[in-house]
Amino acid sequence: WNYGVSGPFWYASGATIQVLLFGILAIEVKRRAPTAHTVCEMVRARWGKGAHITFLIFALLANVIVTSMLLLGGAATVNALTGVDTNLASFLIPWGVILYTAAGGLKATFMASYLHTAIIFIVLLICVY
Image 1 (tube, helix red, strand yellow):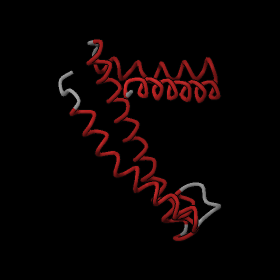
Image 2 (cartoon, helix red, strand yellow):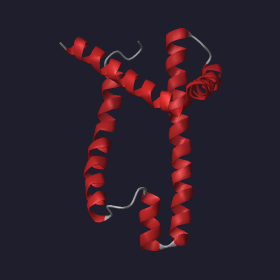
Image 3 (tube, one colour):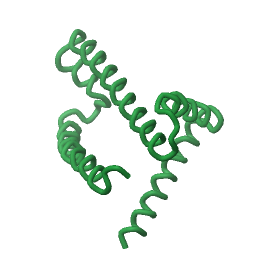
């Protein structure tokens, strides 16, 4: 409520460039290395074990940073909507995901994510028109 339409707009605008560039890069990578599954596989094939370990460490740190940012963003959203303390929300959100996955299994988690995304798109289409 503090930033109106401007906050989400500029957040999405900043991510748009990265998504477009990644799409172009992914097509080129698939052309040059059709059997590779990860960036680290390509690094090991091209530069060897030392570079592979270095990239594994960088990839792990990048995943930790992105997960932390998503968790903090979710906690800030919960705080803004409900007033729950950010630290408490940061603790409870992962537990909710863990319990949901343990109860329904990984397949149920993916199916629920797909269903939630479909619902969001339907609501967006209704709101646009």
